[in-house]
Length: 117
Image (cartoon, rainbow, N blue to C red; front, side, top):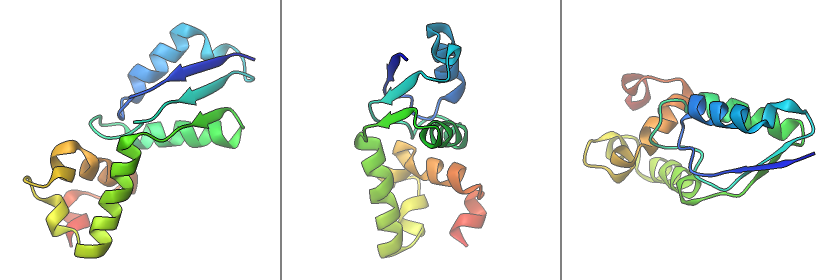
């Protein structure tokens, strides 16, 4: 078993998978991944990242230390619960500019229009 560490993958699954492949992570099903935060926001493959991490978690091969972007994702969901979608989905919203809103859309599978209705 070997430990592989990554951080700040920010929703870029293809690049992360390629880097892990190049480092030999997929060479053994005993290898474990240590994720040092910031799995989401910015990139367009949040769903792929989430599915990959959930699979590793189910196999007992993931050590996940939350970073500030995981905290932002939780804060975005709290803000939606407290004030609705409109303040979050606008272009002047921090959650919009940061990519957290996009991450929520990717993870939910909803379009922007479906989410704000």
